[in-house]
Image (cartoon, rainbow, N blue to C red):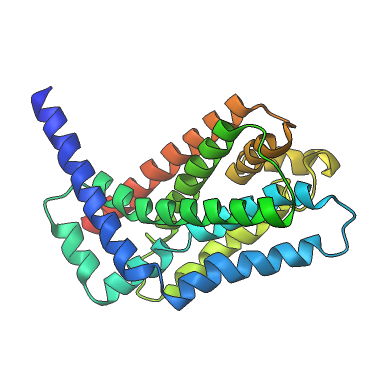
Length: 250
């Protein structure tokens, strides 16, 4: 047990050190700001203009889109850049576990997205005159959704390239379809049966459902199911990321 505790403590310390490094270097990169702030805002405007929905009901969708793009935008930029400068190769050869590398890379994106999510919520409450019904569900949704999609960004950044555009292109092949199969743009009940089946595989479906529950109290799956689904997605992305980065290390 003492040896296990020491290893876990060392991994957590290493993960936090990597997260702090990314926070200092990459948060204000223009490519990250565009993909995490401007792009989701434009997508939301294109979706919201002309709809006869109360403004308050649009806030969960805006928040879900923002978390998806902001959380998954750090690692696809930072890791290819560090491959180019050979910094990431030195990190892989360092006496640090691959689990800590994946977790540390993901933490920076999760913290970034959580901060943007809080700011978006504050602006939305004022602009849309919405109100929070379940604050705990909102906090859990912000934290788990941010970590989930940050893990997804780290997973895609495992693609062995030094070109940021290549990783972003692959990532957008997944992120953009998620918007249309997860109940954000098209309500879950309005989807055909095959579409609903696909939506059940999307973490964004459960993230949006949990955030919607926090604002208006309505939910399709229940906050417990939404939370468990997000945790499972986090575990899957972490395990898959560890497997791919371990291959890179070898």
